Length: 343
Ligand code: AHG
Ligand code: MN
Ligand code: MN
Ligand code: MN
Image (cartoon, rainbow, N blue to C red; front, side):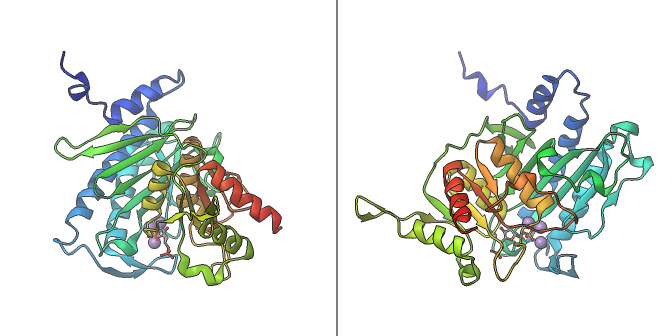
C-alpha cells in the first residue's frame, strides 16, 4: 500500500474548512476570509522572492504613522492585503500598520451581513531585514464585529482575548503559515510552490512548559532596561548547573515573525520590553502583540507585558505599543516572578 499521505495532501483551505465545519453555526465566512488572506500571503511571497530582481527593495520615499521610512515592500504588501481582504466580502473594517486611519470597506464591497469581521494586520514585519534577505513576514488578527456593529474602532479597541483567529506567514527558507482559530489549536502549513498550495506540515503545534534554553532580545538596548529585565536576563547568562556554567543560548533575528516562530518550535523566551528609550515598548498591540500572544497561548505558551497578560490589554489607540515577553510557560512565569519582586 503506497503512503497515501503523499497523494492525499491536506491543504490549508481543506483543513480550515473541515475545522470550521466542526462548528454547527459555521457559515463558511471565516473560512473564505482565511482563504483570501492565504492568497495575499502567496502573492507577497512571490514579490519578496523576486524583490532584488525587480527593484522592489529599498525605500518607498514615504514615512508611515509610526515615523518609519516605508520600504517599497511595506507599501506593496499593504496594497495586496487591503485588496485581498476587501475582495473577500467578509471584512467590514481593517487596521494596518501602514495606514494611520482605520479602513472602512464600502457597502458595495461587502457581502451584506456576511461582512462581519474586522482584520488587523502588519503587512510586512521585519522590514529592516528585506535588503539582507533575512526572514520577514506578515502578521494578522481577526475580530468578529460586536453585535449590531457595522464596523467602528470599538470593534478593534478591545482585548486580544476576543479575537476569533490570528496567524502569521513567514517568508523564510520556506514560506510557512501558522494559524489558530482558538480552542487550544495551532497548525502550521508550508507553501508548495509547485502547486501553489499551503500544505499542513505542523499539525497541532504545542509548546512544552520548558523547551530549548534560548533567550531572544535586542541586547543593544540593555543600557535602557529596567531592573527586572537586567536581573532576569543576567540570571540566564550566568546560569550554572552543578557549579558549572550552563547559560541560555542567544538568538535574535530582528524580525518578530522569525523570532516568534523559532520560539514556538524550539522553546525559550522572546522579548521586546518597554524600557527607558521606548517607554511603551516598540511592538504594536493590535497587529503584532495580540496575534502572536493569541497563537502562543493556544499552543500552550504564555505572553505578558511583565506584569499583565498581553491578551487582557485594552488598547485605546489603533497603533498603541506595548512591551512584550512571550514563549515557554515556565520561562515566562519566571520572568513575571522577577517583575513581581520589583513591583
Ligand atoms: P516592522 O518591520 O513591521 O515595523 O516590525 C519590526 C519589529 C519586529 O519585526 C522586530 O521584532 C523588531 O521590530 C525589531 O526591532 P529592533 O530592530 O529595534 O530590535
Ligand atoms: Mn514598520
Ligand atoms: Mn512588525
Ligand atoms: Mn511592518
